[in-house]
Length: 128
Image (cartoon, rainbow, N blue to C red; front, side, top):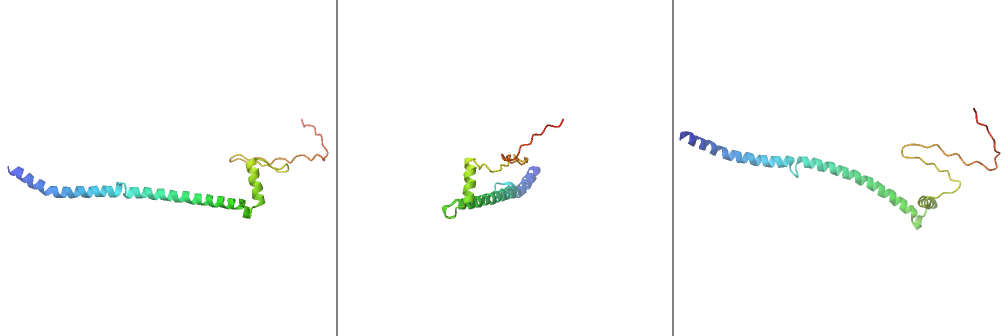
């Protein structure tokens, strides 16, 4: 019987510290790894930085588009800008335009100008 009473006293002395340790572990765990803990805060900081980068890119794009739109307004119509937009939209050009086409990441040689019809023609034989 003495052993059981000693165990009861020992268990009674451990109950309160175990309860407080459990509460401390609970709050400590959620402060570090919870929905609003330190790990989530770091992730949110990364997302905020990425969103700021996207915002800066979009602001620059908006400013560029606003400048182009201002050039097309009737108050400050730029004839060169109007002609450039018309050519781009209609996919047309003048007969004397030189067109340089290049694919993504590779360069193409410059096109030769058309032959002058007034220039004398020279017939050359191929070299064997």
